[in-house]
Length: 378
Image (cartoon, rainbow, N blue to C red):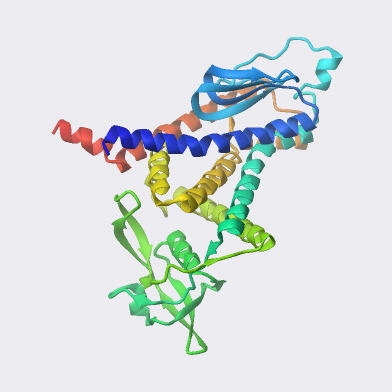
């Protein structure tokens, strides 16, 4: 398959995953806005010029727009921004005030804004619940089948047959939890508690940073303890209640891992080159789609969690930025001045655009596009 066909397939898969996630996010805003008595003027998937759409009986324009990377809900009386457009009415009748976003209490406005990210978290949990209930959940026991020669595990005295039950006093139930914990803690010393011949034993081990190929065949630095499980692990069928509990646990764990990884980047523990943008996500989406439906669904869940989490960051333009404004308003009894909010919006827009440019550059380096063009002129 040529490069153009690969690119087209990756973009198709990415948009196939992203569009429902954006819809769910905006639907959260929409439903709570309607519940709070706010008139919704526009529900858009994408930005820019409208491609097609319709107007419902409540006067809401539902549309698909030219740039599909996102979406928005515009409510009557809501301050417009550079992406959504719109104008604030100069004067409002009493009837208009009752359905205006800005005339609702700060609590109701906060609920409407928070509903988008919350919808993404709920959607992720529901999708995982159905997946675990219908297809089962893979369980790989944390029993060591093999030790890599020269690895940290061998140096620490771990043996095949050992069952890892805790890392730094954190209880371990599956081999995946071992891999996730080591991935996040990089080359930090680990207190490894294992069960051997019916007795518990604790050793110290420091994972080593090695270079190996990722899912796209690119070199990546990863932390490795050097323990191997040869078993793929059975798919355990779960009842609806157990599937829901497993889904909540999974989403909570992955969300905390994302926050920990971000914190490590801020402090320089983890390289900022790991920040990926649309190009990398699209490429990874295509690669995961080749593995199968189950893994693609897990990937969609991760994207939904990312979308919900990122939108909660206290950056103007994002939902979290609006929530920060409302928190200040609730504390001081009045909103920030229009000038302060406008400056905050400009700063937020600059931050978001800067991050997008940085992530895109990372993607071009990661996908070796920069190397390709560099080779043309050297």
